[in-house]
Structure formats: C-alpha cells, structure tokens
Image (cartoon, rainbow, N blue to C red; front, side):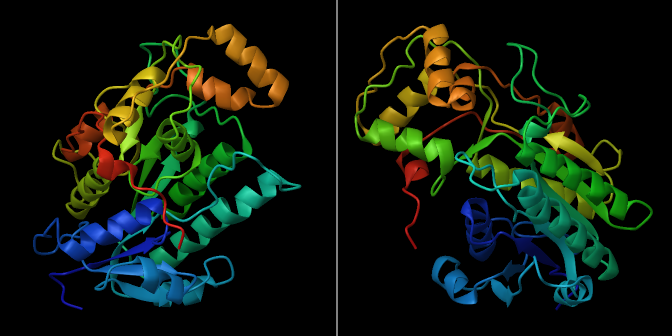
Length: 342
C-alpha cells in the first residue's frame, strides 16, 4: 500500500458508528494529505461475519474476517500490518435490560480483554495511532447544572459497563506507554443519527407513534453528540495524531470529552424529533418527583434519572488540542432513519 495513503483499521464496522465511518471513508469526504491518516483514508474493517459486512458496508472498504474475542495477539498483529491507525469502536454496549449472570465479567471480556489484545497487536505491528471510543459514563451519571464534566475530573463509573470502559482506558494507556503508539480516548455521551438504537431509538419511535410523553415539566441539560460531529472528531483526532503534536504544540496523547456545541433539555429533544418527523410533540407535565417514584416502583429508576437529570460535557480541551469545531445540536429527518433490520 502506498505510503501516501496509510490505512485505518476499524473495529465495530457494522455497528451504528462504524457503518457511518465506513461510508464517509468510501465517499472520500475527507481527502487525506500525503502521509496523514484520516477518515478519508483507505479503510480496513475487522469484522466477525464477512457476509453480514458485505450487506451493510460500502464497496471500497477492505474486509478482514476475524473474531476479536478468540484471535491471538500475533494473528491480530498480522491483520494490522501496514495500518497507520486503529479506530476501536467494537465492544459490549450498555445493556438496558441486563440478563447476564455476571455483568462485570461479560463487560470485561468484551471491553477490556479485547482492547488489551488489540493494543498489544497494534504496538507489535507498528501502528502509530489508536483512537478508542469510550463513554462519558466513566466520569459519572449526572452533573450539576452549569458544571459540566471535564477530562481531568476523577473517574466515577457507576455500573459494570462504565467500569469496563474505564478499565479499558487504563490498560490501553499502560500498553502504549513507552512505545511510539499514541492512544487517544474519546468519552462519548449519547450519540444520535441514522440507525441509532437504545433509548434514543425508543424515544424516536414513541414520538413517531404520537404517544403522549410525561416529560413536559423536566428542566434539565443533557449533552448529546450528533453522528456528523463524532465523525469530524475522529477525523480531527487522526489528523492531530498524524502530526504527533497538536496545533498548540502539546501531545495528542490524552483523554477528551466531546459533544454538540450546547446541551438540550429532554422536552427540547422531543420537540426537535417531532419537527424532524413532521408530527406534533405530545408532552404533558408530570412533576419530576412523581416520575422518579414511578421509576423506582417499576425498576426504571436509572432510565428516569437519565431523562430528568442533567449531564453536561465540556469539549474545549479536544477543540484546543485538534482544531475540531463542534456543530450545534440539530436533528433532521435523515438523522432519524430507522435502524436497519438486516
């Protein structure tokens, strides 16, 4: 492969974020300057099921079938030969209705052990950069209004998922220490866009069905992250790391938080979704205290807290480090494309 076109290896390529990343790479939306790996560079997708990947990923993406859970470090290192950067998106995502007998072990196998193997393989293969998608839940579950999370806050992971992501961050930094590989960790809030799933998909479906939602009295501030904003951030991270230093001259080796330019309230989010769908937002006011009591009685306390509480993110460190410019919160009909059934 030509030196002027370094490849990016991506895991989780058939997921919500990975599919969008591959689509951008295939479209050449970001042309890479000579010697720099960016989202417009040739992409090598590490996939478990090649047939599934061929169905959902665009042509032009190199597919390498491998099982990250069972593959050895040496095998993964061979897979990463000629790769300049790894974007690690794969992992066990936050499960709303957890049924695993030992959630901590399940998350550790998927999020910590695989990250460690992949990082060791990347070092062995001479990969220069490693971008890891983590979660804002490493910082905690909520913030006081007007006091956003920052990268230097003490980690306060509150559940098995967040603990596994924090442990993966730690092991990645440890493996990269003393090597030429630069790791960069992005802690993400809720990401929205086409094919999004989880609570965002549920909310979109409820608004589309014209359900009455009891969120009219909620006055909170939640930082969200639009998919285009995230892809721009990955691109900015790769560009900065390709130069070894940032635009301000400081090392790109760091943890950063990223989000849309301004947070929104839950009622604002519902109204934005309704406008994009061309329907009327059906909100009625139920006191937050009542919602929390109902959540506790129905086993949905955590979900109610996410809907009613605040979680704000300060993205300024990443903007300073890379030159990334965040976009405002915005939802249109294309952003609400249903998740594919394939």
